[in-house]
Length: 144
Image 1 (tube, rainbow, N blue to C red):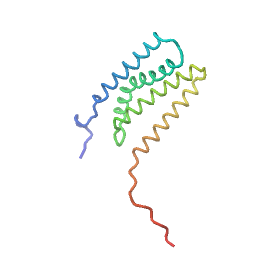
Image 2: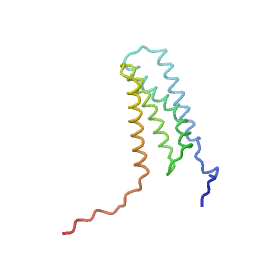
Image 3: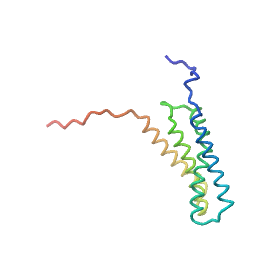
Image 4: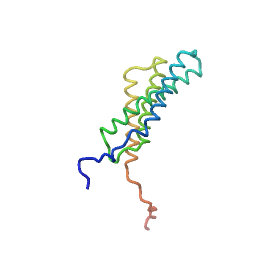
């Protein structure tokens, strides 16, 4: 029987996320620094900019997403791939915001609707993951 006190060995650790977080932060923000200072704005550096924004913002969001999932636990507990996916949503969100801002399309309502859309997608994915597995019974033919 479980009580209200969680044992120390049952709490998820941030250790598996530490090296990927450092690699994403250093690679993303360092790459952005080099890209912005050493290249001219042509086609391939622009695509590189968006890819590096995804890496940098994913790396920056990974500790925050881990902390939020730890502060507000769900049932069943989230797996590491869910934390990684949620942090990747942040990276994609900020890259799309940068892309929309270049075209002068971005305003508050577009950013808000985009955030709500990504949150709805994540909600539906989490709902699908928490559903019980269907039984392997084949459907019965109708009686005549």
